[in-house]
Length: 266
Image (cartoon, rainbow, N blue to C red; front, side, top):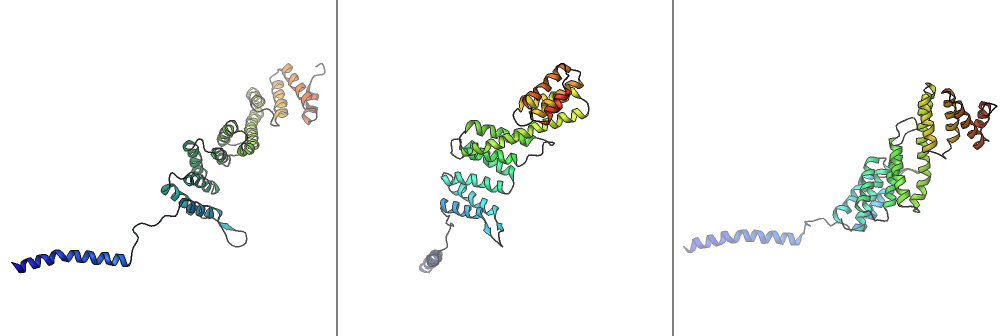
């Protein structure tokens, strides 16, 4: 009986000895269970450094955008309520923008405004959204959907955030995009004109004058509209249009042409 108890006691003690030995080994050579995460500020500075890139031979610079995005994402994952997490969202968008990955950039810029509508950087994200669409625009003879999308966000920026640095920059681009749409309509009108579809052409020239005035196309649109009226045998309206060209654009070559077209009794 006594021998049996001794064996049972030894059997019970053996696992405990193994555990204590293991703990002793751990205490003498500790292995961290969790990797330390740098602070949000340290991660943000690291991400900025990665975005700035590294100089290589002469003036060439390389940027590891994927690494930068990964670093900024680490801030969002580990410090979601930090102001650095908010800033990291924009930097991720900027990283995609700089790579010309505009669809990914658009997602982050638009979501920023939805998540932080009162943040001071919202005008910046709205302008960058407009620029992301602008960088996908085409010449006036092609589809103008990106141009219209650019104007949607420029209009939003100018109406909601006037006086901001972004709005001041946007005014120049807004005018350029408006002119591009006007030129697109002019090209369509010219196409109808060459096919002698004068009514369709006249409608487009009137649209340029009504929707896109003051962009430098008024004289051309007026003169061509007058030409359409002549072809449609609407002589009185044509004469009136040519007189407007002569009166308001007297220094242009079109004024001289219009003067020759107006009947003498007008």
